[in-house]
Image 1 (cartoon, helix red, strand yellow):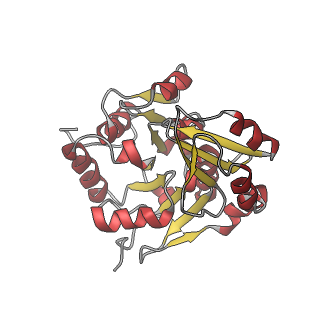
Image 2 (cartoon, rainbow, N blue to C red):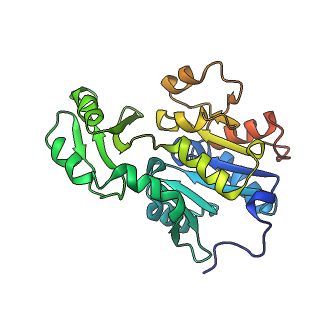
Length: 260
């Protein structure tokens, strides 16, 4: 099975590249909205590049593409920015080692220490997947003890709470924003041809990175409050996939369907 039609122009030469979060953003909106966006992407692959920027791990993302018929991305920034990878023609995910070397060094095999430190911490339930360069927890807001944040900072690591449901421990200075900028620079994509899209606080560093960005209409209030006043950010009225198309038109990044 080949997931990318060939040949296509290099992604750096395309008119527009979408760098999008998944849950609530690319996967958000009505069935009709998603179908409109996905069909438009597939019809314009020679001029539209696609990068997924998500807290999900890459193998889960590829499974979603296979089972749910999502457009296949050409690159993935996964695991809340701790994975930077290319999607091979066969649908496998190949980490881009030069871009991940710094991430690995900043993490310095901290996983076991983090898990031991936060074992039994109030309001945190360890997620079963063992990620390479992060540790992730489900968060219960009513029970959560915020001292976890101080403990992680004392280790020289970063923490991130998103959607008031997840607590991620990350290498210092690593998140979606720095990682998508590193990938775009590596691929030599002109910044003005990119649109970053998201809806929760774990998208903040990406949407506030200075790249053209959209907070879709169903975004967390905590996110939109932090983005107020940034000229590079479009606050969409439409939700999910429709909000992405709204922003593409607002920034005049590409022609879009007339019914969008």
